[in-house]
Image (tube, rainbow over all chains, first blue to last red; front, side, top):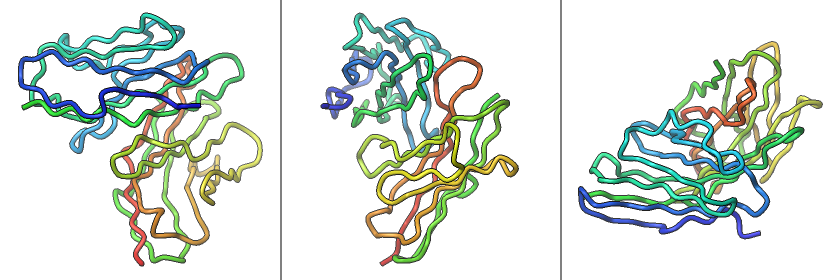
Length: 116
Length: 114
């Protein structure tokens, strides 16, 4: 199995530009999570989906952030417009959710975003 | 509310010595507990988990963790540390209210000194 795939691995953009991060979960997994990691704030859960439906987006910092999961094998996290304080490593993780499952999450390699 | 605490930001241990990375949890009901490791410039990797059963859980790379209900702890241990074990370690607990998200600790940076 290829594991969770994220693209791009690195993104450098200028303030005000739109940024789109992409994630392909492990095949067969039905839960997908977006996290942000910074030195100051540590690891933060932004949003997660079960069966492609957003369950909890309370961690999304503001309206500039949006996430979609149009099908079971793809999700995007979009920032529009981007700001320097959005600079962080963004991780996607997936798990198998359901009765009897332990919900072990498997993480992708992350996207390092730098907003100048 | 569910939470985990990692009381030590940094742990240093000499190569070959036993290591312990501490984690305590707060949850109503029976917890699902996890340990993850993060190497530089990598995503978090699953190490081990406790769901039920034997209090001593064995995981990847020779790590193990002991679930202690009376002390609400789930410390990560390894009998003999390697320099390659140097990394950031996260403890996590699964939401027991029905949601399936994990609550992560703040992480402990382990440095194994040659």
